[in-house]
Length: 82
Image (tube, rainbow, N blue to C red):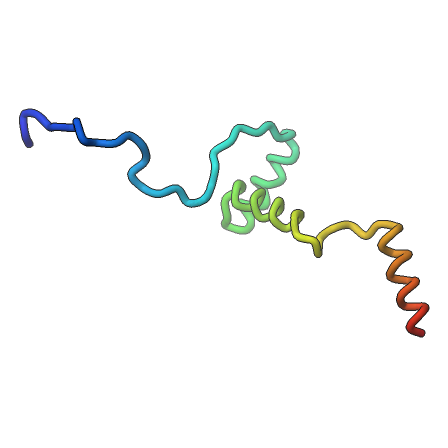
């Protein structure tokens, strides 16, 4: 080991590039957190991973709830084709 080190040309910040994740603070209801922790214990994944997967799935267009307007449009198209 040296007695002194020169850090004058050093830069501050993380040495490792971030993994495209952002640290936030979020308040979740206790029962929601407990449910995710229980599922995590059963699946072997982390509860934060499960929350992230759930949020990602909810953002996809395929998971959007079927609205009355969408149902009318589908029925109208199907009846026209019949």
